[in-house]
Figure 1 (tube, rainbow, N blue to C red):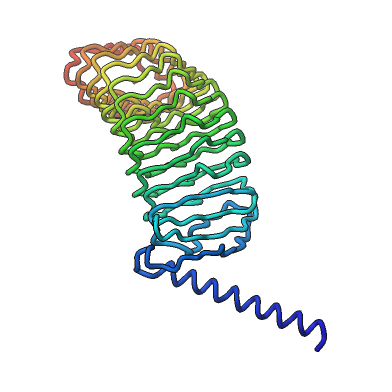
Figure 2: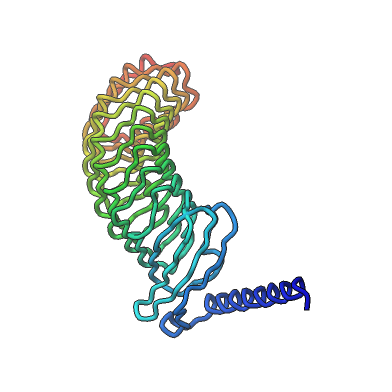
Amino acid sequence: MSDGIKRSLKENDLNKLILKLIFLILYISTTEEKTKNLINFSSEIHLVIHGSGNQNLLNNSFYREPSKVLVNEINKVSCKMSCELDNEENNVILIFDEMLTSTDSMFCGQENLIEIDFSLFDFSHVTTMEYMLKNCFNLTKVNFGNIDTSSLVNMLRIFYNCSQLLSLDVTKFDTSKVTTMEGTFYNCSSLTELNLTNFNTSKVETFSTFLYLCHELKSIDVSNFDTSKVTSMMAMFHSCFNLTSIDISHFNTSKVTTFRLMFYECTSLSYLNLSSFDTSSANDISKMFFNCSGLLSLDVTNFNTSKAETIRSLFYGCKNLTSLNVSNFDTSQVLDMDFLFYKLEKLESIDVSNFNL
């Protein structure tokens, strides 16, 4: 028998083996039995996931049932990966044999996940974590261990809709290279505390929807935030209903073009120090204080509105304000100021003599 025929037979046998493994894994992923009743792979099953390493790996359906995931040793982009089932602990262990530079959408939409342990996961070369844990609705715990994120640039919506997270330790995150924190903690609505004091935000350009719907937070320390490069603070604290205080007195907002919805329905805030706010670049400040019904006073005398095109519903529902000085407002570029003072029930008078009406 020729060498070519032998080689061909060996390749056919290998292909058959691979197909059998794939069918076995697909069977496991669709079974309704509990993980403890599934086959325990005592040896690693290696799958080569083709691509750049930024695909949604778990949507390849090699598991559905397990509620906990331990991720060990990520090393490179092209992703040689193994899967083990730990029957006793109800765990799935995923082992990547090559270095990843992206974990974008890696666990996106995995509704069965309850806990993830990243303590052995090598993030040192990862530059982007976009949507990494998006829509993991039942995730309650994430362990990052001594994470190295020194290469990280993109934190877009990492924890988006992780609404059952009870605690989250991100104190080891190195954010010195991060340029976007848009929606990072979007709808982490069960978090009662979040320590961000270590965050280096010197390169961040957007905080849009940063803490959107984090309505169980009562306080958040952002006093160390460098916002000198930020262009968007849209909905940054949107619907943080229980937030009673926040120190933003040092914020550099000279480059911010939109403050739209920034404090939308922060109903428990009684005071905001906006003395450092430079709004000279802003074209949209609509609904910035929408329904901030707990505010007892608000000083916006330093606001420069010369570029503002919409101030719609800016003070809508600030029903406990007894005075409001907007005599400095330049409305020459404003196209929409509807509902500007709507439901300011305790406000007896207001001077708008300088307004372009």
